[in-house]
Length: 132
Image (cartoon, rainbow, N blue to C red; front, side):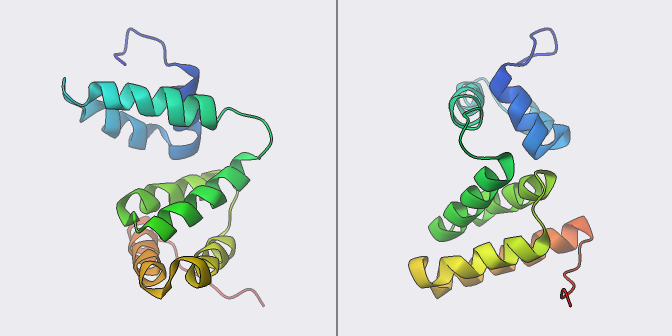
């Protein structure tokens, strides 16, 4: 995980989806205690899962957004909203995915996901416009 070690395929995919700044922050903030978790995330989540065939990166991102919203993991959701847009999702698609969560996971987690999405949009300088 240091500069002298080439990134694993999982880390490369993580950088592709989440962006270098996000991954650099995660790796640079890792301590000796948490560094094995970062390696696990790179190898298992981003490596063996995100490198599989069968779903496009956009489809994987939309699934991830829905799951994080349904589980109430709003901190992680914000990063994956960015990742979904990096993978070609639009704000309109993200809104529809979040709305789709409501009947299956409940209104409270959906409301929290919408609040997190609006916080993320404001931080990114994004504004939703109705498609007409």
